[in-house]
Image 1 (cartoon, rainbow, N blue to C red):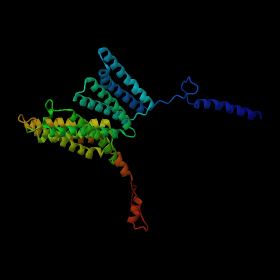
Image 2 (cartoon, helix red, strand yellow):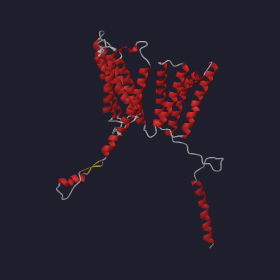
Image 3 (cartoon, rainbow, N blue to C red):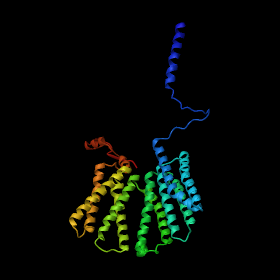
Image 4 (cartoon, helix red, strand yellow):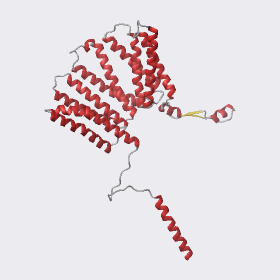
Length: 377
């Protein structure tokens, strides 16, 4: 009995330190009923920091100046209003980021829509007979409204879908501007541009948001933020290539607008076909591909200048070589990067299953049914 009791005591004595060593250390907490929340993951903290940083920049450059002009009756009052709004933007955005989920889509859309809505409001207000305070109020409401709209619209979207939504706005806005110059070639003359054009361009951009979002949601392939950057790259190269057709002429504003617009649209479609559908670009991948296009375009300019001589240094020949060089630079950069294949396409190919044993059985004439291929829908 004594030996059994001694063994039991030894077992308990050894188990207590072992259990103490396995216990997870607790954080110091002075409360009795509060559990401290775990720190968010690094990616989440980075997104929160980006959101607060972007909103602080907006506070310094949009919210603060607009609020100062709107309420300031003198220099001191305006300065105080600016400081309150600019500093408050940091604390308000930080408090929101602490309480709510911040995603990449919310960061992208809230920033982009704030800038674009505030700019459109300022543009429209400047082309009307509104006074300075009214224009400032429009700009402030536009900036804050754009931020709120971007946060709400970003719910449930990926970063690529959000970037495509902004791309749709910008492409539609630029297209409306080009069409306006084609319809009214004297639009660049002083006094011709008025609030009607500004409002029309803004409306076109709003429609572009819808179209860009629909494009992102309906495409059967994966769409990343880097992919959307390559769409802009394709539009730029397309516009450069289209300019070769009018470089040696004396084109009108109408011809310039329509030519560049057509080239940009063709380049966008080509980029979607050959880059976006085939690969998944990260931000750094897209930047590297753009750098390759720039390097190839610069080389093309050099070759064009050497080939054309002094007579036509900025003519069609030089621009043609620049366009070809940019296209070559894009494909050389993609070859160097070995960018990941599109995840959407890879997932579809992954549904295809091969059955080698079924093929062997069918080739040897084994009786029965043999499965060669299987594709899961």
